[in-house]
Length: 245
Ligand code: CA
Image (cartoon, rainbow, N blue to C red):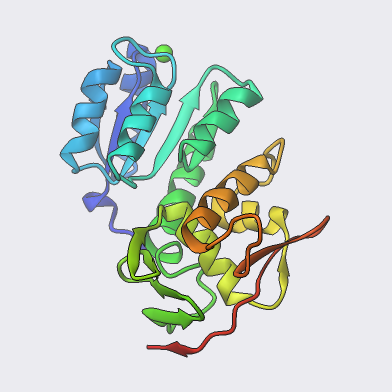
């Protein structure tokens, strides 16, 4: 289990009472808490790299929350982010998740719900995620398929002699497909296991990430040979494992 005293949470929230309340309650739970009341300042603190998780408001002075998230992900920072926002619209939710947020809470929310989400995200990103979906304790580091090498330690793939970095979500999706290779994995299963989400309005998020993954994996994205679409059902990893080490 996570050692909470080493878990720093960065709260980026401009509403003073909520910010103070979150800090107080999270500290009572044993977390170390840093705060910021401004998007630009929050991004700077996030980039310092001390935080293990960020609670991110969307409507912020300085820089909107979604921009903060976009900058973080563009610079390769995979630090877990939970969006906390008064806006409950699906569009913000979907956009936030597509930009790489790990979860989304609509204000007002209770402390117990917040803590449950924080623990779930930390569990997913600190243990299960890095090792795939946690079904195989003994994980191969390198897997070779025809025309494709997946390196789980480096979070990268090699195709045609060129190494490409995978995002965390791409790696988790690929891991789940490869763990179930030869079987159909539904979009709902991917959403549930990779994002931990059950009430997302659409499965477009999954399709968008699969499209990005295919650009990295496939010679011809129109004729994928590794990750194929099974119409009406989901996706299937088809390549045969040649070697793993
Ligand atoms: Ca706000």
